[in-house]
Image 1 (cartoon, one colour):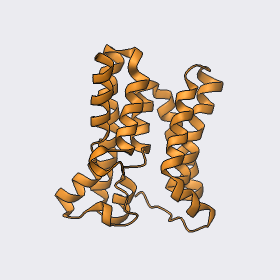
Image 2 (cartoon, rainbow, N blue to C red):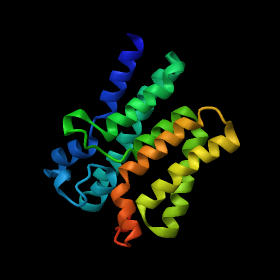
Image 3 (cartoon, rainbow, N blue to C red):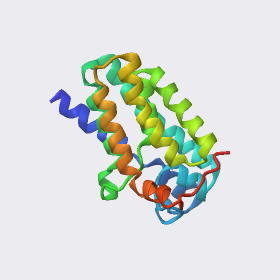
Length: 192
């Protein structure tokens, strides 16, 4: 019962779509009909108000941090299951017919809760790739791949499979971006 409740609540919290909610409230727009059609903060940044984009980013990170801190201190044995449930809720929210975000901001929040060093490794990797390429999608993919490699070789070789699964899921959510990167049609992003 306890585990089922943790999975369900984690999924529901993860499936809160801040990009959609905030753009409807403050911009009177439906973000799913603008830009790339995705509800993620990068699309909010590209098509809407930058402040709303950064608030969306912050809330997507916090929706992983807050519940995972509760789990970490009360049910540490379930932290990976809770984190995966939050991520799946973000990427496949039931109320949007399982068409959600790409999971990157939520993943960053998860990393900071699981091991804050992983969060910093992700951000550093993301920024290095972004400064070189200006592609948010490429930055997210490479930073996501860096985490299981770093975890295996630097931290320990336990639980690294969890981060491989998350990389595969992030790669899946970015499959259209990958096609555009290969075809050299991916949009570059300004984050300031």
